Length: 161
Ligand code: SF4
Ligand code: SF4
Image (cartoon, rainbow, N blue to C red; front, top):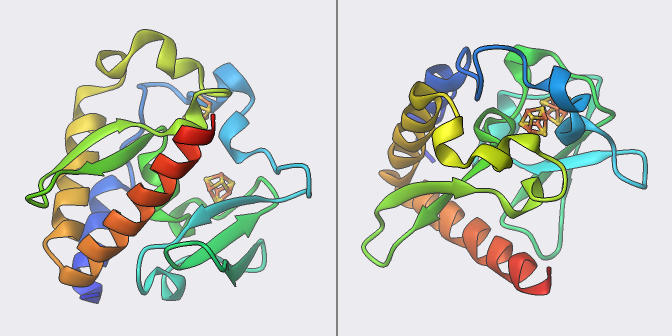
């Protein structure tokens, strides 16, 4: 996808967080905790592998995923974290016309205390900026295809829960 769009989306969210204070202090940064294999994972947007990661990260391609996945050990360089981490606990939802809105990520259900207060409990500028950034991504054909594939995978996962 157009790298300028990806960089712009990342820049929009770089310094905006779901709460005014560090929400990781509430939950012990539960969403960054490694899984049972000792690692966590987040899908990378098309071309994002050139902008993220470092020695603390491993990037792999999953057979049944929309692209590459970055795994970390629960620590990272903040400026080089994936866009998927920047929008969490939200995830984009795409309608038939390609319009984007935001909802809670199904992976947040078991671990994120912010779900208790619903979407309105999140900072309004975080919600709005996350949505604007995902709309920007969806303006790129490859970005929109990625969002659709990611959402389809999330729905399968949601169905299993
Ligand atoms: S699990 Fe939720 S509250 Fe905890 S760090 Fe992640 S987004 Fe913040
Ligand atoms: S890359 Fe950073 S923000 Fe993303 S899960 Fe790992 S430690 Fe958390």
